Amino acid sequence: MEPRNIQPGREMSKDVDKLLRRIGAGALEELTRNIMPYWIRNMPDRNGDGFYGRIDGRDNVVADAPRGAILNARILWSFAAAYLRQREPLYLKMATRARDYIFRHFFDDLHGGTYWSLKSNGEPLETKKQIYSQAFFIYALSAYHAATGDRESLERAITLFRLIEKHSFDKERDGYFEAFTRGWGELADLRLSEKDANEKKTMNTHLHLLEAYTSLYRIWPDEELRRQLSGLVRIFADRIVDPATSHLNLFFDEEWNCRSSIVSYGHDIEASWLLCEAAEALGEADSISGVALRIASAAHEGLAEDGSLFYERDDAKGHFDRDRHWWVQSEGVVGFLNAWQLSGDKSWLELSANLFEYIIANLVDSDNGEWFWSIRADGTVNRDDDKAGFWKCPYHNSRMCLEILSRQ
Image (tube, rainbow, N blue to C red; front, side):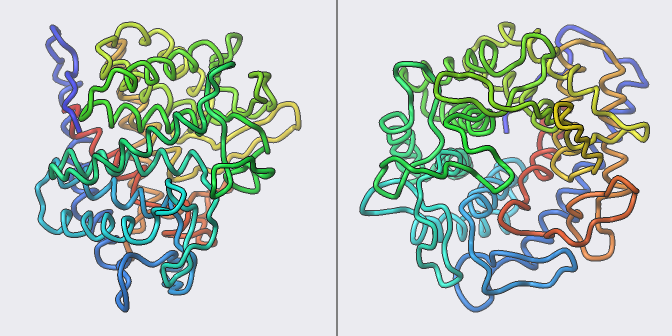
């Protein structure tokens, strides 16, 4: 994690300094006393290599659950990034365990790229080439290289970048296609999950390519990579951000016609700061700050009275999901903090601090560790969805803590 200047050229007032110290101390405590220990204690497979595929919402290990690419890549990223900052030997041990398992089982030695999922014994299960997951392996391997200097991790990340550019980049219309068969052929069902639209291009995949390419560019400043990363920033500004609302449009056909009406508050606020991170890496921080603040302001529409962020709405279908998902709250803390850094408006910092305190009071499982999946609209804790699993990983919440600490 690279440190970020808080307010260059400005002296902080006492109340601002107090807020920053409070959430900084809370983030360090949460990272080192709760989040990382939970994964170290519970997730490694006691009878084999790698990590279990699932722990349910009541902290029961499901030993025979499939093992997802996203979960494993995010475990690697989280522990590599935490080790880079904290230099805790246990974090390096976990990161190396994740890297070794990924190298042995997730990489497709025949066709290149990585599988979507494995059986619990490490054999390939779903062999499709989802670009979203290729991006996460780039992100994770880049972090491991940054933390350790491991050359093979960098080389594999570069290879994945070149495969994405060869097979997924749309040279005629710009952007990236979603998914392919194991042999990189056309695939009928392109979706990440059942709730997604089956469209050729999505905001979500482009967002995490942006994230991955930013991380790779920091350790491998290649000219083609720079060009493609700059192009991703432009795609968000010109095609994905709705010019009327400043929310992100989520699904598109291959011609970039919008195919959805959903507003995702978590993705809005996450994109607002990841775009800044990409522009900073390119040395063009000022180019995107106005867009980022507009996106953050759009996400602000999803705030509840208690300072938390609702999940999503779809006015066209009369749908409003008022649940407070763990990852949305994590991204809100960072996004609002970033908006304060961009604008100097203390109200953004207060929103970030209030949301952090909501998380600690409501989402943190003080009895068993980690966070619950969500708080339901009626205020009850959701124990039905996983504590750890295909999508519930130590990524959004550990990254929130690391971002807070890097901005102190």
